[in-house]
Image 1: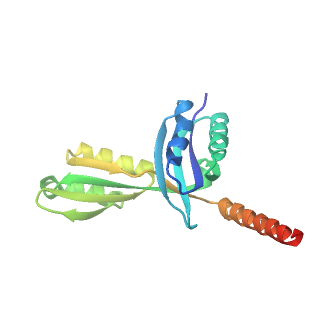
Image 2 (image 1 turned 90 degrees about the vertical axis):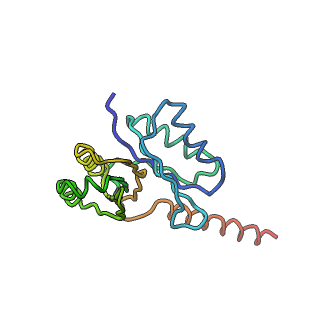
Image 3 (image 1 turned 45 degrees about the horizontal axis):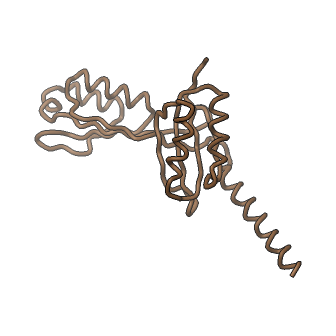
Length: 189
């Protein structure tokens, strides 16, 4: 079975407990979630879940359909990496003495277009925005220089590369149907 890294983007109303329902779909199918990011979307009252998982096309279709059936979910769609623009952020806490003593550390930071956001006598914090592979490679090179104290990375954030936003169309269509229904009810009174 050929596995691909898929990104599922879920738009939902903002209700408690939905995250648990969504992750339960993955758990039941024994699919490990690689990253998960939940945030408010550009639409008031609508939240966006960005979930990545390695699986096959048939399974991701089934998972997406199951998530869509959840009562508070407006829409769920899956994408491959070529259908989205995605980004992550990572923070690296490195030792200041090593940063000062080994010029290679600064060279590696510059090589990956990362930036130092804080420095004190004990540690420095490096921030890197970008693709997952770049973040991992920077970590590997800094670790090889024996200067990493801590490392953390965000989940993936993603937007589609298509010219339209499916959830906007869905909400506009839903609003139009609602208005039409209200007009018909008023006409029948």
